[in-house]
Image (tube, rainbow, N blue to C red):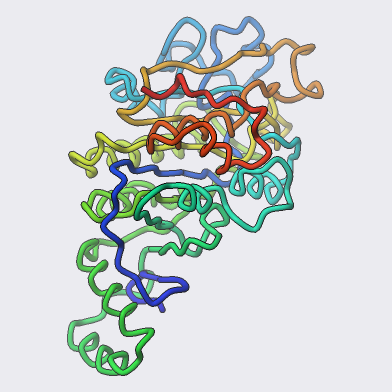
Length: 378
């Protein structure tokens, strides 16, 4: 049943339980594969400038983190997170399966396994299965993302595209639903959630349409409630930059600016609940190290991501940097992967919800050999 952008799935019980877990985890998926070498710039690498050519930033335009790495200009708001010891920058990171297919890459990242096929459950749903006590999840998306699919029922919320209906219409509609034992509860829950979120306009999920900050505001209003969900999945499309990627103020830099603004807005809107919140930002793959012939980058392998929140141990750039020399590139074209996404995700779930390594291994099957990067979390 959908109403005002609210959608519920599967069971009649639609109100969130009184959750016993204090933590909140938000998984932000940037669909399309963003260019990690443009977002987190290895300006200290001696091969950076010659390799990147026309997509190499001037050092004066960057937000330096240390002598080796800097943030793109659009990510300037992240300086606040860095100063507050709330930002882990991840680099040379990739899923455990080598592919340049959006479909396969996103499937692996969302299921948390090491191959495109083989799991009906998403890793966020398995996390809900593993967590003790009452727990709940929500997807801030137009539908149920694969990361949330599984036996534990979750809810979804997406912005309305149909305009606002008046109270009289809702009252008349309520009479129709009142006699339905299954749908009436869902209808009432939708009305309650819409009251919580308000009716400010939403621009949609695509980052190019400016929808990051509004959607992250909505996510915060849901998650900060005492009985709000433990887990949220949020996604933004538009990161596939094959042409005219640009530099300062270019297409990708503007997207990164929207992302940074949205995440800082989320942090503010969470209020006191931020103290128990962790945000993970990932994409299905990085992009080619060299620009292509249309001033963009093609599908690659390793890339960058972010781990954000007060529960991280400290602000740092976490990377076993492989270098950008031609001989160091994966298949002669991509940044070589040295960090498994599952190692970071294991650390995030364990540190946020006080899970044991054995429980984290259950969330990511067949990953026993991948040690979680547990020192990333405080």
